[in-house]
Image (cartoon, rainbow, N blue to C red):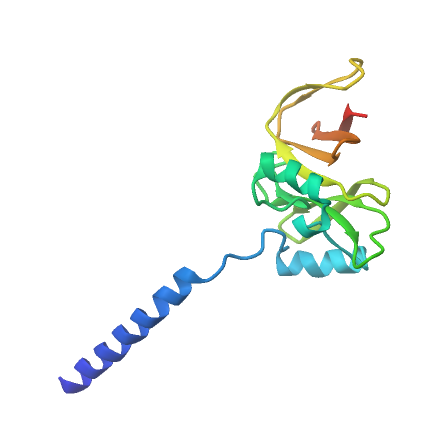
Length: 179
């Protein structure tokens, strides 16, 4: 009986001390990729990293946070293909001072691994990415429409350009929302 009491006290003390630390622990970084995807991205795009809030100029950071709070400007979870499988759209840039060119990538979990596709490349500026609901979208020129049945991906360089990408069931379609 004494042994049970001691064990109960030790476990209770452990839980008491452990729970507040876990509750107060900071959440994972919004720009962190799953470990298995991180290694595949590093292999396919050496020297590149996901765009973070720190990579944005002050005005671009303000624009992004106004609409997307503190989410990651270079990473968004989106059911792009409409199959409910994990899919991430990400903007990758060079590490360090030479941010060189950006790359818009979609990584789709197939069950056997990640299928990674490059949707676009950009110049030396730092663009952002986000997702929008399915719907009808018209290009900035008024000449092309996309009726998206699944969520879409928007690749944007504030005060410059924005391109919408949608899965049409057999291919990726794109329109310019801003030019």
